[in-house]
Image (cartoon, rainbow, N blue to C red; front, top):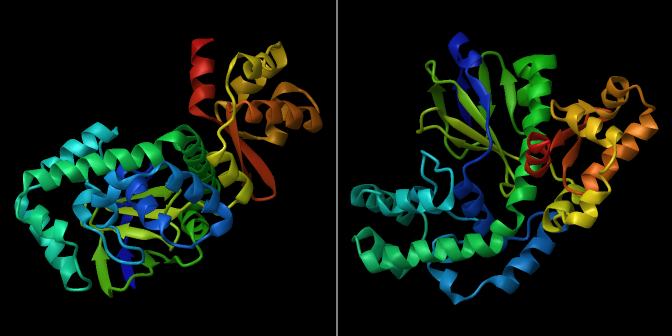
Length: 322
């Protein structure tokens, strides 16, 4: 069990952010060969396996199911895009790479490619980064926009929980395995350690592909705690089947009321709040929100006994252009 000790500065520096791209890439590669949450991920597994070929082997052999994978593959300073992440991986100091593999070797066998990478073999590194790109293009890129919409929706819910209920309720909402006893957050871990955050705060990041429970990254600055996005079959199915956003779909948005709905949702609102802001009935607000959701402009997520609506990247872009 990890015990994260907060002071007043740490509590003021709790932040909510989307996860780094390579975190989703690496945890998805792990999940691909597991059987966790079949209802949520079997469709994704089937589609991904159809797209993959032998070129991704240098990555997958470093990510065995239910075991450790090298930390340098998820850089602590996340890049904004895959190209930047791959540049960071290529620039990993040889000593750090060697230490990463040495730590893993204490717990599990390593493939032959690990030895070549640890020895600084440039060809092995080239094959690995090419495998990461190929895997990303098959397993993550087709769903990236929908994934980001779901992540942003979850962050909106967490921000509201924090504003209305405080830090204790926020931590309680992230995962049932977390326990908050002010000023300490208890995080399940194979290690037993007390960690003084020391004014660094804590970055909270939801993840589509992390399923086993919250994953702490305490050696980075600021420290990070990644938590699984709550399992929702309908939401996950929507991720694997992105909405059609061609002219025919967007044509359904014509009209002053739906434009006003889109504008109101920009700040995040529930169906009841949407109806109140636009002076329309809750049933009408729900109907307009359904049209916007089907066309990929908003995403809706359960919040207590209601539904919270937020913009997708496409919805935000359309609103900004107008």
